[in-house]
Image (cartoon, rainbow, N blue to C red; front, side, top):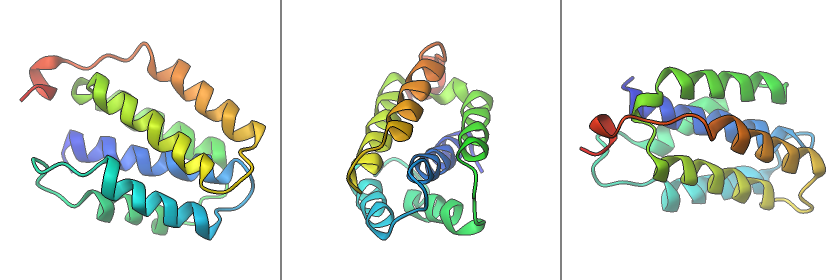
Length: 133
């Protein structure tokens, strides 16, 4: 996969982490995530199907640990950080918040995970040479 595809793979892992933070992944969270993929991450310049990548993540394994999914996603983001634009960072946060809100109530664990992500991603800056194309 390309670095941009890897970043979108990471948002799939982050969505799994958020969805698992309140226990198990609810049907509503999965359905909401599918809608988010269609609206938030669609880009006519991508040469790949974002939803296909993300749902492969969700279906690949039975992820049982929020921390494993989160740590894997953060590692992927750091490895491909040169393609991480400020807009993509904001989109990742927005997607995580919307996934958390898909199944009420939003738990303290979900809120803490999102705050942790905001702190962890803040110092990561992409290179405009790569993401401004």
